[in-house]
Structures are given as C-alpha cells and as structure tokens.
Length: 295
Ligand SMILES: Cc1cc2nc3c(=O)[nH]c(=O)nc-3n(C[C@H](O)[C@H](O)[C@H](O)COP(=O)(O)OP(=O)(O)OC[C@H]3O[C@@H](n4cnc5c(N)ncnc54)[C@H](O)[C@@H]3O)c2cc1C
Image (cartoon, rainbow, N blue to C red; front, side, top):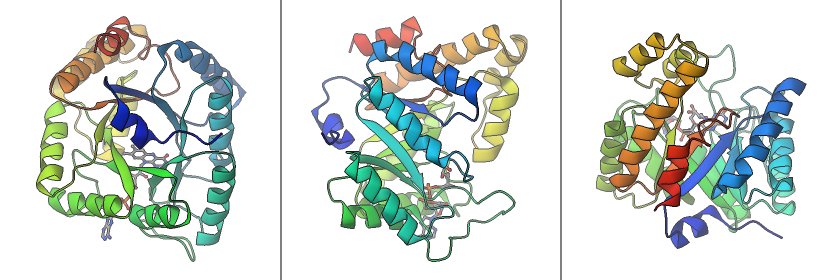
C-alpha cells in the first residue's frame, strides 16, 4: 500500500503537525538505542517520521534499514532523505525506482554537503548540482512522490545573500517541492523573518520549523559552527551552568525547545519537526505532548 503524501497530511490537518527525524546508527549499540526510541515514541503518534541520508557512503544503506524498521513498528508515513552527493543520475534513478516500488511516496530531496575533504560541493560525474534538479528528476519520473525541501532561516552558509537563498528555495518549490522543513535555529525571530522573506518572494508553501532539543553544549557548538546557526548566549550560559552535558543539560535543552515550540505554534507555525538525535526524552516531555494534545 503506497504511503499517504505529507502534503495531503498538511492540507488535511486540524491541529499542528509533529514529526521526528532519525539518523542511521553507526553500530549495534546505536541501533539498540534507536530501537528503544522508536518503540517509546510510537505512543506520541507523530504525523510522520524521517531518516537522514549519510554524507559518506557507509550509512546510506542503513537509511532504508531504519525506514523499514520505523514502518515495521507502525510509523506512517516514513520519509527517507536523499542527497545528490556522490550519485550519478543513473544511481539516483535506480534508488528512486526501488523506493517507489516499496511504496515510499515522500522524499526529502537535498543536495547534500560537500564530501569530506572538500570545501565546495562538486557534483558526481553525471550527477546533479542542486536540490532543485533532484526535485525535478523525482517529480518527472514519479509525480505521485511528494518532495520536502530544506529551508534556511539564517540563510544557507554558501548563499550570497538571504534573498538569493530564498530565490533558490523558490526554484526548488517551482520544480515540484511540496513543503519546506527548516534548518535548526534557536531564536524564533529568524524563523519568522525567513517566512516573511519567503512570502514576499511569492512562496506560499508550508514552512515547518525544525528544532533541536540540545543535549550537550559542545555538540551544539559544533553543529552551529557547521551550519552557521546562531547559538544564543543565554542558552550557552544555561547549558554551561548545567555542566555542559548529562541529564541537567538535557533538561535545559528540552525547556528551551518547549519555549520555542509554544511561541512558534502561538504565532502560526504549521507544526514542528524535531531533530531528536535518536533520543526519546525531548519528544516525550510532558509539555510537548500537552502542546500537541491541546490544539
Ligand atoms: C531539513 C533538512 C534536512 C537535511 N537532511 C540531510 C541529510 O539527510 N543528509 C545530508 O547529507 N544533509 C542533510 N541536510 C543538509 C543539507 O544537505 C545541506 O545544508 C546542503 O549544504 C544543502 O542542501 P540543499 O538541499 O539545501 O541544497 P540546495 O537547495 O541545492 O542549496 C545549496 C546552496 O546552493 C544555492 N543554490 C541553490 N540553487 C542554486 C542555483 N541554481 N544557482 C546557484 N546557487 C544555488 C543555495 O542558495 C544554497 O546556498 C539537511 C538540511 C535540512 C535543513
């Protein structure tokens, strides 16, 4: 039975959306954690779940293993991510055929980051250069597949200006992208300013904010440096006071995310996509469940 498309779910929604992002585990211990998390989160009944596509080659096959597992335990729909990194058009076509045959009807279509050791993105031989080309390829071959695309409230690190970045986002949507999920951010003003820039550019698509409940100061500093996201001083200070990582720091991350979620939903965001880092605690926070249960 083919999956329902996420765009259908968004259009039919009567309450804010909730989705979770998983990533492929690297070893048996990480698989065990993912399994536990998956089982624990079934009760929350998110509208959809996703699994990232590894930048290197090794975890790619695991993306579909994770998607298969998430389906098996009852999540639906499950959306694999796909990037252009290191793939020729023929390889992409092969993957798409396989996924379509397995009933996947949602794909997060991305360009991907430059492969390790390169500072600039280079397309693979006979590969694609931009996510918009991947969206176009998917939609021409499989018009029944719904494509999510990435948006950057603080602008993509390679973009020349925020306005140019939004114009490129528009190209992805014009190529057939159905909705936008954002890069993580910790200050909601970036999201609302981004939405305003998109609307001014004529983009009407749903823009789902992506939030990371922080679990460690060092880890979030690394992530923020990588994706050029601002880490508010107040959050860094609170994390430091809580020891940097461990249970207390995780609680700081959860409380911060809860405050962001409440404000985002109050001010009209269509829902929340949580970068859960394969952990269940933030998604099971009683406040979070209350926000979604009461709307
Ligand atoms: C929600 C989300 C999920 C993600 N999941 C993954 C994942 O699973 N695996 C992974 O490896 N990475 C993932 N990423 C990271 C993403 O791959 C990187 O941010 C990557 O650098 C850009 O991907 P993109 O799809 O946004 O690329 P694009 O939309 O192609 O944009 C990349 C850059 O090129 C510019 N650009 C776009 N089109 C043009 C054009 N025609 N001419 C000139 N410039 C152009 C854009 O402004 C931007 O600066 C994710 C990011 C987000 C926000």
